Length: 97
Image (cartoon, rainbow, N blue to C red):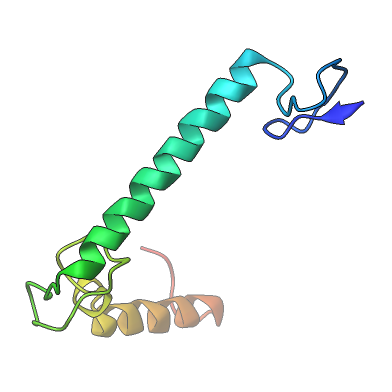
C-alpha cells in the first residue's frame, strides 16, 4: 500500500516508483509545481531590480507584487478610528448604524 503524494489516498501498485494514485492526481501535481516555479521566477526577477513605492518612494520588498507599500495601502488613522468604534460597540457605548 502506498499513499498518493497529491490526494493522500492509499493505492496499490506494482510499480515501486509510482507516487500518484491516478493520472488526474499526477496532472494536478504537475500543474501545481509549474505554478510554484513560475511564482518563484517572478519573485527572483523582482529581486534583481530595485522598485520604489509609487506613493511614498520607499523600496518595495521582492515579495510585494503591487506598486505601493503596505503602509500606503492601509491608512493607519482610519484603522485606528474603526477599532475605537468597534471597542465602543463592544462596551455598549455605541450602537450599530
